[in-house]
Image (cartoon, rainbow, N blue to C red; front, top):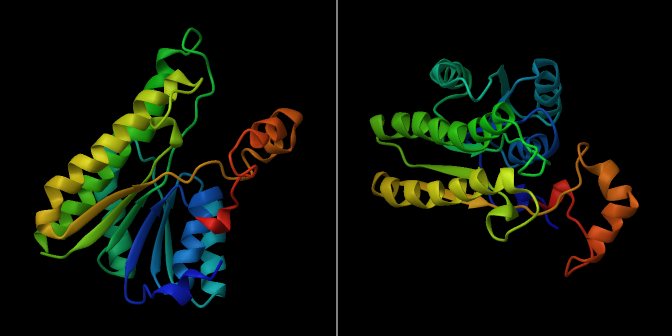
Length: 226
């Protein structure tokens, strides 16, 4: 697979990536930096964000790391202001932060469900709103990318994730329709099953290998493919 930088350039663009401290978020941040973007890194774990920022600097890129609990709506605008003061106006938002809840519907507790809804559905909306408001006020086009889930496409044995996943998909379509008049594109990506540090133990287990064997292409994706 050719590197992103050989396909197109993001030089002069500023991209904000949430959930950028590890896994898919970290991988996307590094790839975007390789394509020339300045990258705002947002997550809760500052030490890991700083490591990603250092990796980007080692590539010759520019990054700014700032901690944010994405469920705290009042904290979003100050974070955006800090990122833009360091890197310039945000051209692209990648809503990547998300949580999983691997429990049956009969077992899930209210607090856990509310947390998943807050991170997976509520946070992407208010982050998109805050970034779009800045773009509209400054009459700038832009792009918002929501990292979604295959769970929204097919009924699976994870009921607590079904509503947030489908809500994010429909929200993406609604925002795309409303904001295209301002030159703001809103899209979603459903990466599928990717090996990360969080799920590597499962994919190496007999159950994980059996799960992979039932996939049409008999393999799970790697981070570099997204």
